[in-house]
Length: 177
Image (tube, rainbow, N blue to C red; front, top):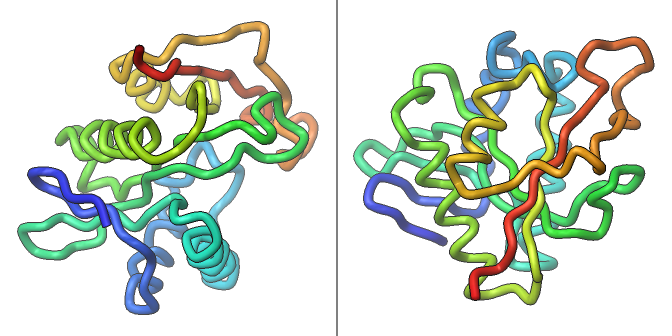
């Protein structure tokens, strides 16, 4: 469990599934993820995160607001997916419900995730990927000090050809000296 002034990043619980289902069905939240998630797809994602956390001690954690224990979103670390330029590298990612946007929660959670990586993991850098049109996401990457690597732009293999969100951009931040 990681605590920040306003948030707790923690392992997933079964009681998180209903809120996760709602995020997966929100068109604004899922606009750059290819499609809405069915409850079954969301459950599989949560199950993957539970397994990753048990195996490695980190995942894309559940992000809870400390004030009221509300599940606001997802943020954390995992190994980059096969078929992408960050395969095998440490990846940071996030997704938040719409009413949590614009309040600094994503940045707070991402900074805590990076601090966890530098303190606990043997990785020389952390990478992030997103769709070029997702300005909120790559804007956060830049506010975190990440640098875009245009030579690593790619077509995401799980997004169908011709889909406007298939082209992805890549960012990286180096371990602090």
